[in-house]
View 1: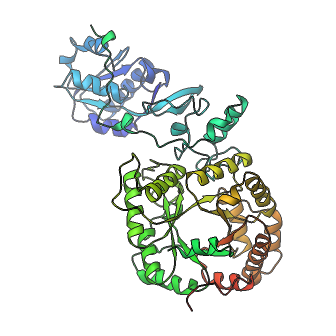
View 2: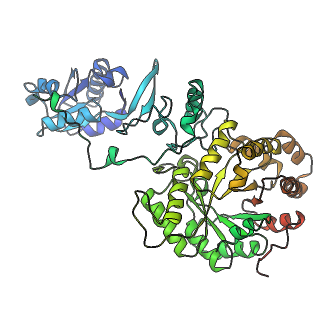
View 3: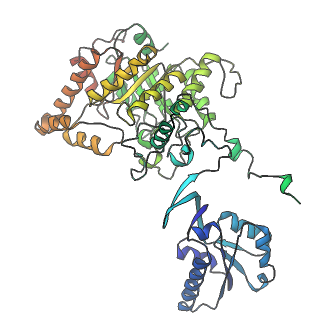
Length: 222
Length: 306
């Protein structure tokens, strides 16, 4: 899932200040799962913005709507009939959602209400952790199902560094050392020999070679 | 030619020290440290923005040391440069006559004075070692393209015998040596027992035959420093008996006690098969190096200029 957190309220207020008619637009996917931009958070942000506007005597109209997915065209088109009522959209989508809406409606400003964080897992209630950097060339087999790019602070492919102590990372002792987990897991599967060979340098052209990455699949195209 | 390589290959016990470049542009600071260390050690490591704090570049400071007649060991971390810049600086170092290179990961940016910086880590230290070895031995950069002339470098790496997990520490050492490390400088040794355990494992794998191991030492200035190293510096193992020993002498004698511990450790290391030398990291206390090597009966250095 893509995780995100809401931007500071005052920052949002600053960005929407020029607009009188605002659509606060939620997204029912990842950002709903991480309680940042779903229907509930969209309603709460809309109310808070209306209240702040009222306290300041601002004459604005703020309404809410939540799409199932802001990052998929089929869902974004549902805004077609309503958009002429607004000067701007405040999106609680992730970075992809904000841009998908902006691409679709070039004539209207789309303002981000969230800071998009990472691809991660829900570990517990209210606790999300990064686990994938989307490198385009998955190495989880070699590393026993633990990604050192996402989970080691130095992205070491031939770790652990000299700061691994008692299974903890020197950068944040609250965090486990990813390399300790890799070694423990591969040891359990009797596969530690996978770590004896030198892992070659990563081919970053798969991640950031030529601008935005694309996936084109003819079998999925109509 | 690398003086360090010459001494190690001759079978003599080598001594290296560390010179931290200044947080400024004055070459005089480096040259003053050069004067303090000249004739006391075989080679001088120059740290590369250690603890992620911006300092004069290691390459520039090495060039100054070289000009002052010392044999510099260029430390390069993979934290701040991608593979293009790393390989480029390796060529530049060789062109400037620098003959020793220590390939390191580097302290994470969060520990330094630029915590907002992007940590590059395009290569890791082992991949970097491998790249430098291929540049030198095959005259090729990463990807296989040929160089017009190869760099001439004695290649080293660091090892921390005190970090976890212990069995894997030796695997990592083996990987560094396989990647190209000809000499190894270790993390500061205060826990001799653990160091011996690590060294035994390394010897069992035949690693002490394949690379020269230099034991790392940092003389303690005070009991407070000992406690700080134990509690605040990651990857550091300072046993309680060392701390008690430092606390057991009056403050004004603690520096002397720190030097004494250091000299005793060197005596122990000299007697260990598989240890080829020592690396003395007297942090902002370069003056201590001369006294330590003298008291450890490591003077005169063989071909050190008078």
